[in-house]
Image (cartoon, rainbow, N blue to C red; front, side, top):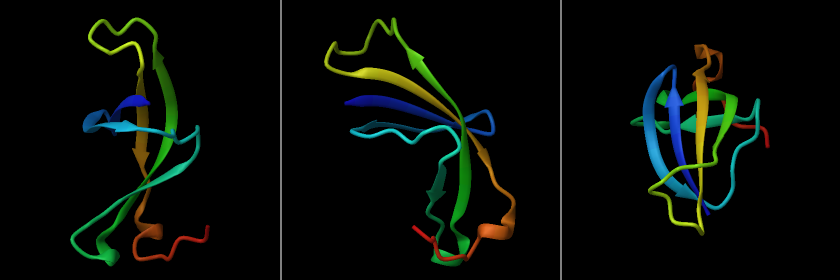
Length: 80
């Protein structure tokens, strides 16, 4: 398991446990109040925190740096 902190445009957006990680340049969708208001971000950096003192040894701590994309994807249907 990975304990992931996601930073969107420099602001911490989420803190969660994940069994899989997005890769560099992957797109992440953030749900809005309806599908046309969903927003998207691109992973620009994956940071492995190798010496996190409060992280159980079964987990690995990760920081994701994400930049929000422009509005061209809003309301679009993902294409796999």
